[in-house]
Length: 330
Image (cartoon, rainbow, N blue to C red; front, side, top):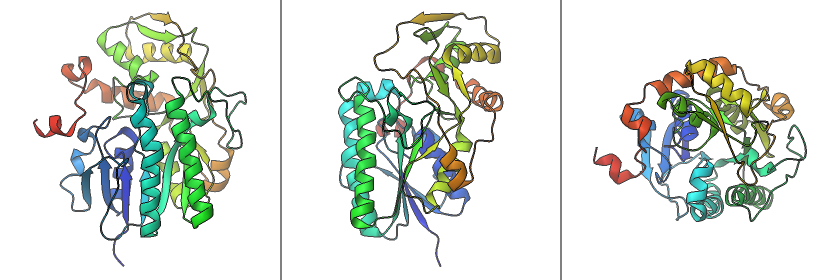
């Protein structure tokens, strides 16, 4: 019996690239697909020489064709930070809707199991704390974050429709704040923003009064949970994240202590519809997947900080390349 084949969309992104690594290490043939609108080929160039890895420069919002055997699809293509999806709102909606539809059709044609990357943002600014999978959310569909939140909510609905109507094998992971090596320094999310500011000698910017909370999961823990979910027999959404909750102000203070910088914290107005609380209830993951996070925030932050310290001065102060053309001209 030959190797199983998995298609990872968003393969050049933060999570997609770590998924590619995991499946390669588990002995799969990996097909990576990315249009590089926010991904970076630098994240997966270490895989290019491998016979079990292929890369396709393609936008999944357009028709997706893969020849030959396909056993699993991991749909991780999507802008995932506010800076990205506020800049490219239409593409964000399309990858969650048209892209998901295209890939579900491919999964049906290939009789493949498909796992979609949903998000804690389906809960919006939650009125229930911590958030369980049974909570329907408090989302503003026409607010600035609606393009991402509603794309993911639609993605879940479309996936469940294929599961119930066509009997397709599907899995849904709701990802909470994740961090680790290969995060983009300039993607607008709080952890790389704080570390980037510290490395550049800038004051750390906190939006609002810093009382809003987040729960940060190290990337290796997240990938383990996703991998277990794919091979479980559970079709409904599962929260994967770290329930260790912290305020943004406390987190900024942790970063200052970690980096040994002398910067101070400055405060700016809170963006519209920014969630005030974010903490996963992971009882379902514990029960069904026998999973819970293992890496402490102190250990994970040190690894992540060491990664960001390896960036060149050009990478630290300038925007990275995002396009295929820019990459191949290097």
